[in-house]
Length: 344
Ligand SMILES: *[C@@H]1O[C@H](CO)[C@@H](O)[C@H](O)[C@H]1NC(C)=O
Ligand SMILES: *[C@@H]1O[C@H](CO)[C@@H](O)[C@H](O)[C@H]1NC(C)=O
Image (cartoon, rainbow, N blue to C red; front, side, top):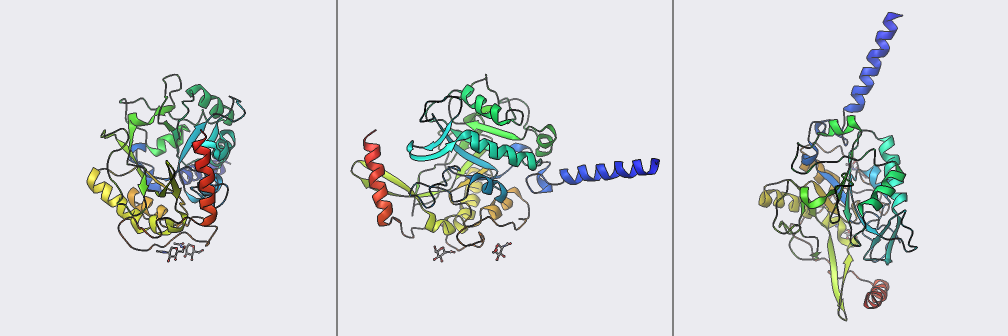
């Protein structure tokens, strides 16, 4: 009787320990403070539809991204076309060009994943082009049950918690916003108090920069390494930037590893968020593991096209392969986009 109590206590302790053994997939990450964690990040994470669309930056939906190991998500907040203020729409430039649907849906998917995976720490990086109030975010996060998961860090105060501590406290969702943060919603943190970003407008064929772009010239304890390339062309007075899925297997392979290594050297700091388009192509997970100082677990990302997302090519600078990978159909859509923009 006593003995079986002891046994079950041991079993319980063992299972708790086993659960705690990996943090974001690796036991070696548990003792790291959050500000030393490197996360795989999707640029415009919500922009996976329509498939193959000229403005889409990703292929996989949010649940697939989470299952594949993406732990940081760049999202863009917009007003709902309907004017409903109880939700936020995920759009790019305007909801007419790219509409990623309501935030409530995406947060529901993130909540479901976090419930099922209690040892995962997730980050959201918000772009707030329409200056939505923190209260708007509070409403949608609260409805999704994610305020209770949200960590609030006071700028300049105590050190960031370790991943283990965040997992134990349950406060393992970190949300940064590029503008409009306010003390009234402390978990929606001013990104540039904590994080800087390297430049994001990288044209195909140009070198990958390791400079401090936002906030200009100001080093912060963490940074976003922006590593996605755009083909650009002019249509009338507009410049159109187009994501480059066909070269992502090169962009996200040796070019990515080299960009990380170079910025570590130049900035003397390891990036915290490595942001790419078409993450399933190339070596993102391997590069992130290396940056975290852990041995990659070899887990592949889901590539619907080829069924695999691993090995790389070579080449150390931004490949110019087909600078303008724009087919006739895409060009047609770009004209529609340009006309749409001109009409704004
Ligand atoms: C990734 O998946 C592909 C195809 O399923 C497989 O051939 C390859 O060995 C996998 N790579 C790793 C590192 O597991
Ligand atoms: C990248 O994919 C293209 C096909 O889209 C292929 O021709 C090329 O060989 C691939 N490059 C590498 C380095 O895997």
